[in-house]
Amino acid sequence: MVTPSLSVILKRSPIGHPRKIRLVLMGLGLRKIGQTVTRPDTAQVRGLVNKVRHLIEVSAL
Image (tube, rainbow, N blue to C red; front, top):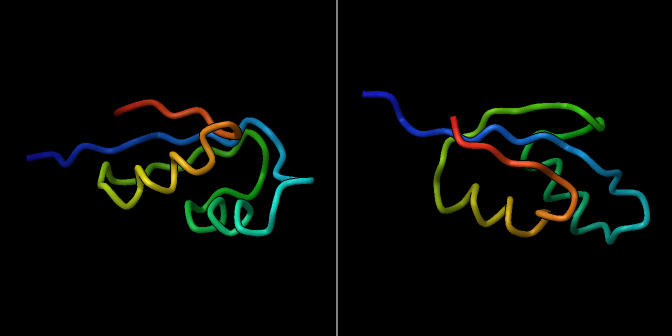
């Protein structure tokens, strides 16, 4: 059985945002604009995604 996952793309720069926001992006594994990472669809990851939803684009895989 395949576990559900999320594809997360960094669309906007974290420059000018609080350090906490940058730490959330690092926790998701995002560093560069346009970078795509795949993360498991868990409550923890969804919480991180919710914190930075104005900077990223998310799609379900």
